[in-house]
Image 1 (tube, rainbow, N blue to C red):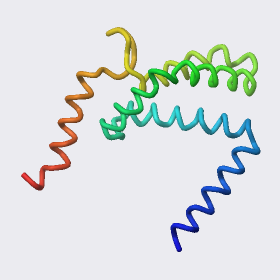
Image 2: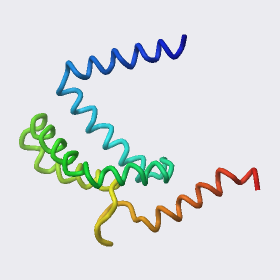
Image 3: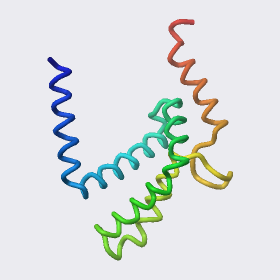
Image 4: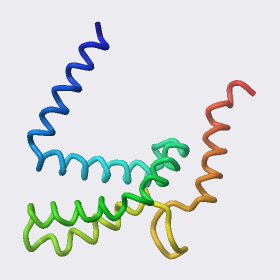
Length: 125
């Protein structure tokens, strides 16, 4: 019963987002920003971070473009300051290309994954 109710809510929400394209785009941007904040704060499992960062190798430009377009639509001239700040924040969830950039370091991520495993298995060792 609960699964059917969940499926109904999900379908209703998906339909609503399809019909309201601007809200859908802004929801996707908000999800990306929340994910980047979760990565920055260390709230997300390292294996999930790694999988998402691999996907963002191919989708980062699309995400940044969507962010720029929507911010310009909503904020007009103020966006010239906001867009670089938001794009900088999104880099928390992407692999860094150089040591000077903000983002995920693969070596640090592997070490963090070992720490998470130790933390999760501490009662079984």
